[in-house]
Image 1 (cartoon, one colour):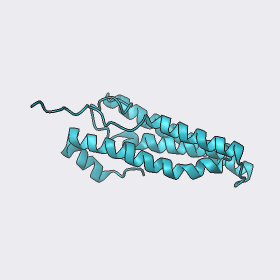
Image 2 (cartoon, rainbow, N blue to C red; image 1 turned 90 degrees about the vertical axis):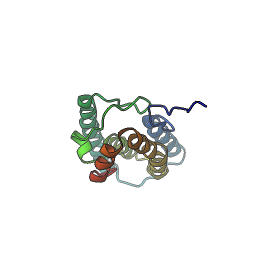
Image 3 (cartoon, helix red, strand yellow; image 1 turned 180 degrees about the horizontal axis):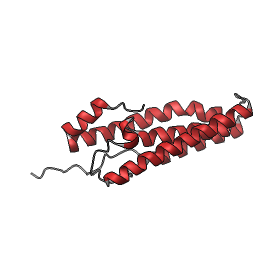
Length: 157
């Protein structure tokens, strides 16, 4: 009897940026149909811009670390190394952290309370359908090396 080999990727439920973009789109659409003012425009613009700038900085920092390690950014591709420098010294998921900040920033710029309300279910989906699958994959592939990293660096921040 042949043993089925597991694919060399985490098998996430969807491409993470698509999850964020889809949820944000739904929130922005709901905001168009059922607008709710929740922050003064000037505050929303400043906070939104700061969140987007922070998201960009974290993403660049993380992408550079992954590029130096010569490992894939796309979770559908095999991971070739555990990245522990750059943004990965502070968070095991800096790219998802940057996507979350970008999402929050966009929701604030559009003053879309609905999008912010959808953030919690989105993060639950990302945690269960993406992060847990990636962590299981990395534990299978890298064993103790990944477990040591996991024990020393927080998941988000």
